[in-house]
Length: 163
Image 1 (cartoon, rainbow, N blue to C red):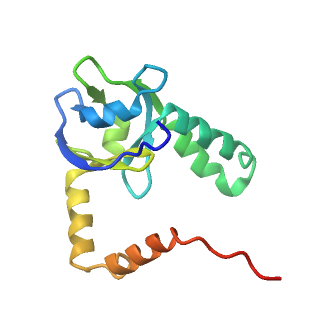
Image 2: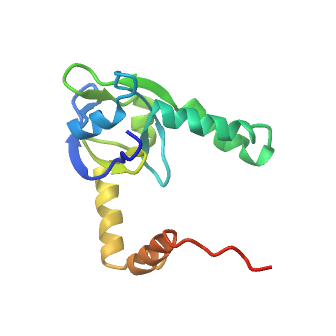
Image 3: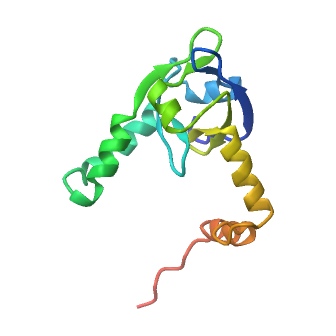
């Protein structure tokens, strides 16, 4: 599973209990040790994220080194207090905890987006607006060409400094 990454997106409707069906291909990517158990919590930029259990363990290990630094305390409190270990039911539904659903202003539809090592859950209206703003170049902070150039520059190995 070393080369696996999440990608693609789809729209999902929430039922009256705040559940949505996670796409099959994404469910497959969450399976570790034969179990489809994962962690749901806050993501970056106004979404919720689904993390593989192994990914959360890596995050915890790295954050532990910084847990007593005051500058990170509020973030750690909000991030870790919103994490919920969960799993899909027999038909692939995932329940979004009510307080997270309300905090993210999720109504009836979400966009389920695979983003490398996590799955992001966006209120559909916000995802659509972000995409429109990016493609129409309406926000100077969201310039697609510049963002793509900077992201692809990460792929270029930097030469070690010559002494």
